[in-house]
Length: 148
Ligand SMILES: [Cu+2]
Image 1 (cartoon, rainbow, N blue to C red):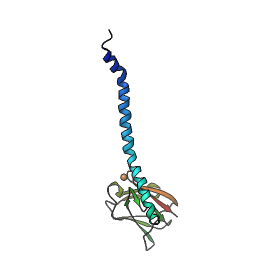
Image 2: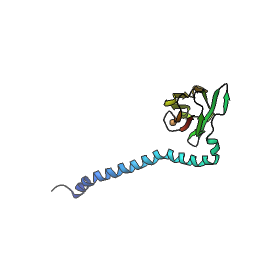
Image 3: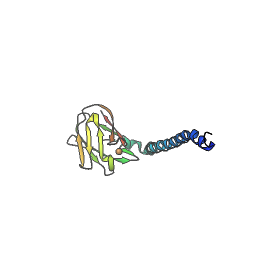
Image 4: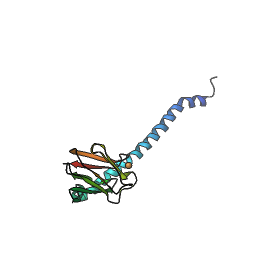
């Protein structure tokens, strides 16, 4: 007389059913979170076609200032790699394709904290040599700066 058999079955399997639901939900969350990296991989393949443009860098050099235009292409900043001379001022400009959080360019080691929503350009002087990944405010768009 421990109640209906069905109720006992329910009690026994309820945690299992709950676990399956949680695992299923987790799988969906993981799949969605991996989507941006899928796009990034895709964009890297596209960029192979124009690989010499990727390692571009300074588009202008006026009055000793290195002028670099950056934008968004295939889910990351473009050009993919920017080579900069150490100790000389750099002016970063928006090529017109920056949007949303990509307007906020950040690189703590180089003390870059640009806001292209508010300003047309951003000037800084690289005083640390090395390779630095810069990102948007959320860390989702990426680009590389080499200070040589
Ligand atoms: Cu972002």
